[in-house]
Length: 315
Image 1 (spheres, rainbow, N blue to C red):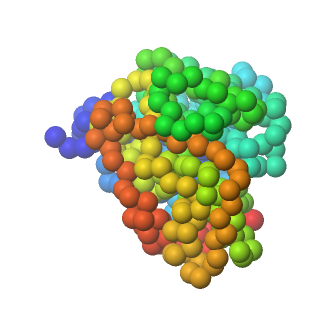
Image 2: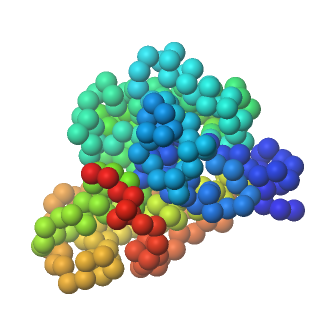
């Protein structure tokens, strides 16, 4: 049986995949990976009013595969109508919601936008996707926990006290046909420098390394490939899952990044802040067979990625 025949839609036709948030750190990597697969037909949503004006390379999502004008904030009825229209256009088997407002953005402290994008939008999406007979994979974050202790499992209630973490926890949908993956990630961005890697590439030396900030996320290429594999196989079961690599502190992680991206740059360990948002991904591993590569291998592969970010990136 082919991989394509195993997905929810059945038959031998390609898996029809819709990625919400195709310009984001993860969304563009999922679209890029899907575009290289002959058993997946992928569409991506953009906020731009037209496909032609979207800040997105054609190599990532061709213009005829872009669904324009899908914004996560705005009147709920308007947002829901745009999502339903996208679903009607694409008729996807699987929808990946990679839309999110992160706290590192300038508008990441806007409580109204956090609620609209991180809380209200995912529930609108879940309702629309389930009604359309598709399956939703929603990306959540380790920041639903306050970082006071690591190794959190799916049974642990969210403990975030900040507006971002609470908005993400409240935005985790549930129900039949809905999968929520809590994780974290590092990777290249198409614009801005909001994540760890772009921050590191632009940071003046010496670079502070947070030796007591622990992390268990994945690189975006590894996470994107995993999401495609899950979509093909119809895994995991509906509900909440933690997706994690081996824990690593951010001083060590920056040291690995330095080896490949900025050889010779000095990483100065710092004892503050003390944060442990590592997740226990053992249940997900048992259910899916997924084992994250070791960190040196993930970082080496990330650095060797041939995607032309020097050409793709905009300020």
